[in-house]
Image 1 (cartoon, one colour):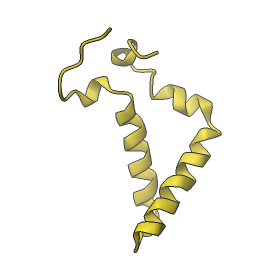
Image 2 (cartoon, helix red, strand yellow):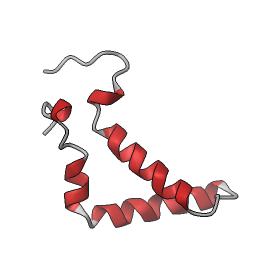
Image 3 (cartoon, helix red, strand yellow):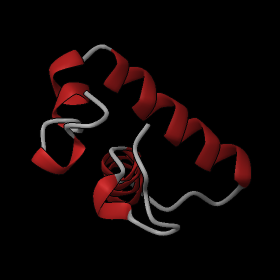
Image 4 (tube, rainbow, N blue to C red):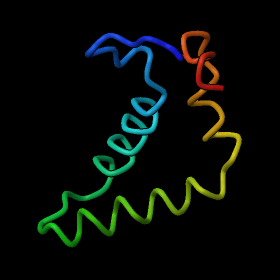
Length: 68
């Protein structure tokens, strides 16, 4: 078991994915509806699922060694 403080984004590999998704979605034209935003997010995550090295890179930082 690994103790994590209540708020520790620097220790959470999910934050790497969140940052990647945010950058990918905001690089495109702004979504004008919830459906467009959802489509952009799902499209990016589907592309990301075909890039296992990129997904592994979210866990590559030394502070994430507990999760690898």
